[in-house]
Image (tube, rainbow, N blue to C red; front, side, top):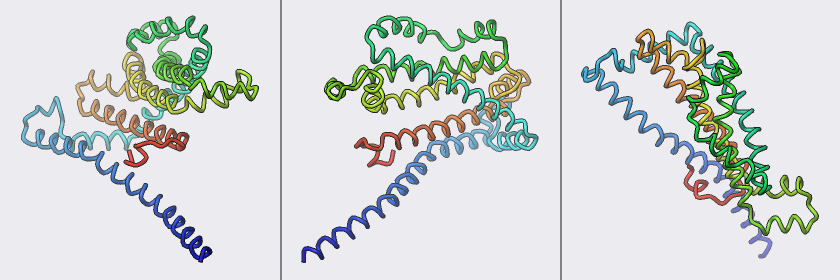
Amino acid sequence: MAEHSATAEALATRDQAQERPAAQGGRLTLGWTIGLIVPAVLLLAWQLAAGQQWIEADLLPAPVTIAQTFWAMAQDGSLANDILVTVYRLALGFVFGTVAGTVAGMATGAMPFARRLLDPTLQALRSVPSLAWVPLFILWFGIADTSKVILIAVGVFFPVYLNLMAAIAGVDRKLIEVGRVHDYGRLRLMLRIQLPAAMPLYLTGIRGGLGLGWMFIASAEMMGANNGLGFILTNGEEVGRPDQIIVAILAFAVLGKTTDWIVARLAARLTGWQDKLSAESGA
């Protein structure tokens, strides 16, 4: 009898395990469907306004015109080339900014003296608007990619630094004491206890840094570039092509959302041990 009960329980557990991925996939599909409601409504309103000529076509072209411009730019290869250039710059700046923010966040989070020494200056620099750095970086590094990559790295740095510093400084003291009981040195304590405990907030900082990186690269490419999505924006303004400008804006939006989704999925995998409400809601 006990053997039969154990077998039934094992079968029930197996069925639940098989149903769970399907349920999660259903929630994910539902989430994407709901997320498309607002863009669909905006697109319909936009088409209606253009069709009724409530807005001048030379200010806001109809979606059909935007689609035609997109197709033309895609056909001649110019859009793909500019997207690749922008993504390349963003990737370099993102890596450099994340590495620098991680090192600074670890140092200031773990060592109070380093926090008192560095944090006031870094907080002051964080308040400087992105556009304020552009002329200085162009003066120092020219209009080549170096100035743009550094500007992106600056934008990525601060969210990563702030979140990691706060997360490490806020690690439960009891966890630290457990590590010291096991004779963990400072480096091992950081790698085995503090960084894992800080991981959720750290990944939030990386995600925020990526978003700022997209904002900063737009500023950089608009101020001094002869290629990239930011260049499409300024060129569209100069030649009076709002359709071209909107194509670049939509490209920024799609690329930004795609990269954010990738980082969010990676973060969900790395913090799968957390019992989060979002895991139940499919957010």
